[in-house]
Amino acid sequence: MKSSDDQEDLGLGLKPGDAHYRAYVGPPEDYDLIAAMTFNLLTTLGLRQHHSLLDIGFGSLRIGRLLIPYLNQGKYFGVEPHEWLVAEGIKCELGETSVEAIPFDFALAQSIFSHCGLDLIRDWLSAISRSLADNGALVATFLPGEEDSKQIGWVYPECVNYRPATLEKAAADANLRFEILDWKHPRQTWALFAAPKFDSSWFENAPLTWNALLERTTRHKHQPINHP
Image (cartoon, rainbow, N blue to C red; front, side, top):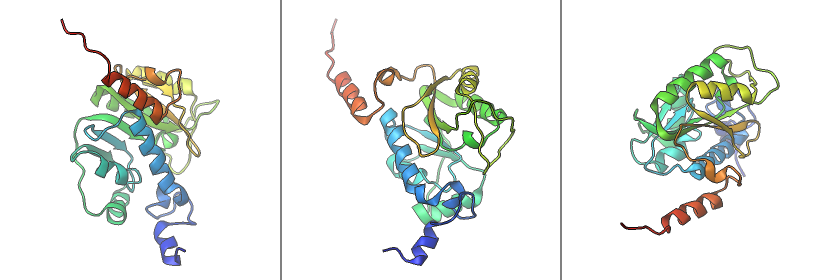
């Protein structure tokens, strides 16, 4: 049984946006769930230890605490304007470590576009497209709606909605391919913003699962090689 001190340390019972390193980034009760869900999605899409990854708005390292020890040294890169979140995340979840800026194969924006005006989303997509590998991808969540939000800038903790067609157009303007992903999220919708050579054909008409990825990987490894 958890003590009251444990409950307080983990921010349980606090509201999203409260000034606690776990609560500020979302419901504290879902802190571990969101991290596990995101890590599983990225590895199912093909993230491996040698890849580099950009974590946009990494906050208190909710997913970073899983990605940093998984990825090879120097392969995790994060952007976060709230320094206190970073400091608390490192202190409480990881211990002292460092994150370096490098080119990347994957980018992540979990619960970022759901708090951004379309102006910021377009800026992010443009910047990411310029740095993303030809076969790389941004994985992001958003809140679908029948109308587009008119908000501009960063509106956290308020949430905003966008039509999928609007994000598809913003992605195309940045030379990225937009696809809705069949990957459950407690409140939002996962989407893929893929560079031109990112291969998503293997789950176009099939479930996006670890089993499907492993079958594809195994099949490719055992394909016969024709020598001239």
